Length: 271
Image (cartoon, rainbow, N blue to C red):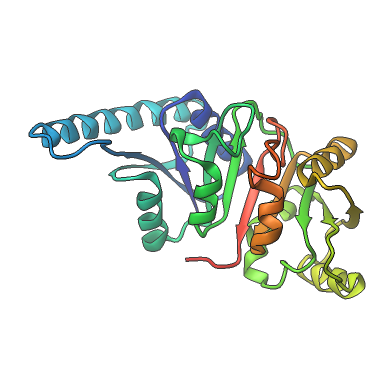
């Protein structure tokens, strides 16, 4: 059974991400865990315990309301409710350590999806901290069969078969075309060897290899996605330098995906 962890703060953005995941995996044998983490911004008050109890009550109440809404659309979905006290990152770390979900789903909102994200946390820090496959769903995204998936790569990050399972799962399910996009840098890479190694991970898949240049990596990838009508982008959180070139605020305030494009973040160092 596939295990999918969905993070929620009961916002419309988080609900949209949940509905996106439920539709994407509709018909599969999946256990969805709907998780709400709540925390206190202060301590030392004599009313802390009372506030925690009230927050726990509201969290559980919110989860029941959310699952009721989701079940109206997907009545057959298996959804368990999880309410946990603590910071979002700590709570998710604990969950993935104990339950090893196949995928984490979260919603993002605002013009800069990687800087303004669920519960007000910094998405860049969360993606760096949580070593598990993550699907980031922008607030405006409506599920559409992913005919084309762009895989941003430096041609050095596809070296472990298990890392590719989440993207392979989607590609196999929807017979998606997988378009590898290499953003050229100064380091030499034997393209032919790299392409052969990548192709070995995706037998019988419609693959293409593309090379783009430009100082603004995000802008270059965005342009490529637009020109090719791609529905989703994937990348491996493996090479810190490459990842920072795409995401770090000092490089660009744009995001790799436009607000309507979901992003699948893979990790080679799974917990």
